[in-house]
Length: 138
Image 1 (spheres, rainbow, N blue to C red):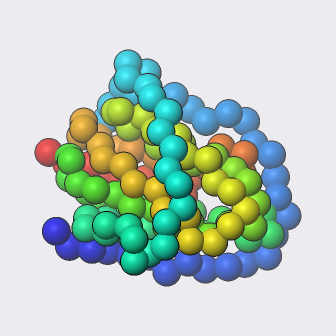
Image 2: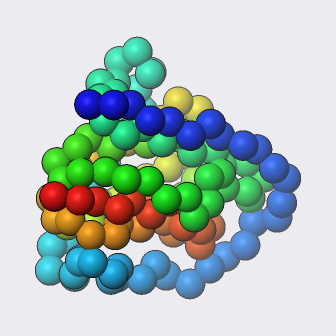
Image 3: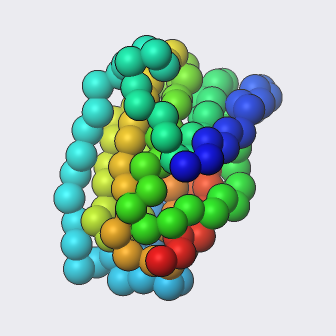
């Protein structure tokens, strides 16, 4: 599979508190299957990285990328490489649904797959930001 990556951009801003994430996204009902998954941070050389790779940066209340669109296919491995200066929680609104605890650390790796086609939001819960929308095709 091809590996695609977004370079992280760092911009200063203040941290805002936002309402809870939505539970449904166009193209799929995510209320029916919900599970929490966690991952321990790994160095990039330890993580397998086939499929889609997204670099996420959280610094001084700013998140990058924001509202980016990416294409994926059902069953494709999606890897989130996260550098953060604050704790937060990543929500993946897919079937199955995933949740990852983000710590104030660099080099965190979170991996997941999507089983049902549709639009999947990747959101930071505490920051209230949509990092990306995956358009997942069969």
